Image 1 (cartoon, rainbow, N blue to C red):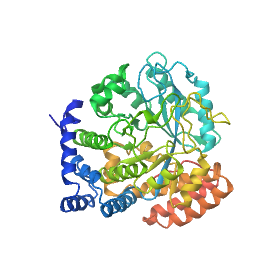
Image 2: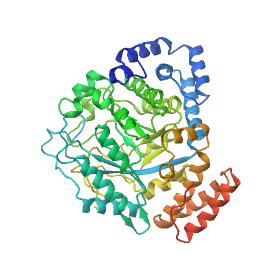
Image 3: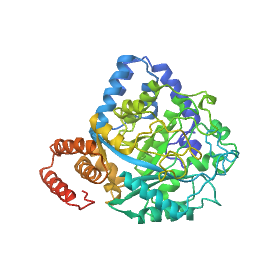
Length: 471
């Protein structure tokens, strides 16, 4: 039975409730009166229920879809302005004991080279990432209690934070590793991680168990309840996501919102981020083997409706997607993107992109400087800010500021100051010229007079070699 406050996976992600919601959506997808009332509610910027949002996803009336796209773009501006936070993934190890049929790291893949970074190699990768200009990483590793125990992950985090190279520093390490225990989540919290990210892959229990035939990840409940254990351990910034293409997208969308509602109901804090990856080609993985792939148009619609239904969440799009798709989807609600990414174990130290240990093919292969330049040309501020985490603005403290709009007083000037750092330390001459003009223009949009003046003075100090200012 469905219970949003239950601590049991099959009750807060209730299959019968998902199916009933999809049936309700089908019955009302052309109900203009209901659709208009849901859109009116969405305009209040307080979110929608999974059932209301499912109606909008089922609706295929062109003028209503356009209305939803415009609303999503405006909500994103209201909560996150025109900033796009930059990050990069760092793959530590591809040793894995699971049998996930959509991932090339699965245990039966005997021809993929297995690799695990030493601490010296981790430090080398971090220096290469710092030389690119990155300040925020998402570390990734396969699930293997022998090769990748929690102690190894913690040691890597410690190494990453300790590397100070020229003007470089990784200021926030987000962690995307397998579901684990409350005790291990406490250890991650104590290590100073940012967001704990775990993709559900699919919320359909029957499909989940088929897609994860062997290994600890086969346990649907343990995996789905991971965020509750992370929250119990004090990690109040968590990131959700499904791998679109494994199961019917409307099922996944509805269940994803139910998971967000569960976290909000139990902890008062919804997901800090929601990612929207699609299954892509990899070493021995053919995306055509999965018959639930979605078109770009459906992908855009999903992104827009996540923004509308969960207006406060950060939305992430990776280099799985092409430049064209990323440009189209950013304006519909995305607030974080990766740049210059490599999805192999290591690889940032190599001049040529290695492919032998990639988890998936990268579609957007541009350098970080190219991505920063491109973002500014299409009207966005690339932000390398990590201030909220470092100032303790996480969980309910971040959400209260975000929902009230007050976060703009911190995030906008922080974005400008961290962009100036990037421009001075790493940017090409063309990117530097465009960026400095953008900063001058955007300073005028800092509404608080005192904050604007402090920001202006800090920009001068950054030009004189001082680093790491934040509100």
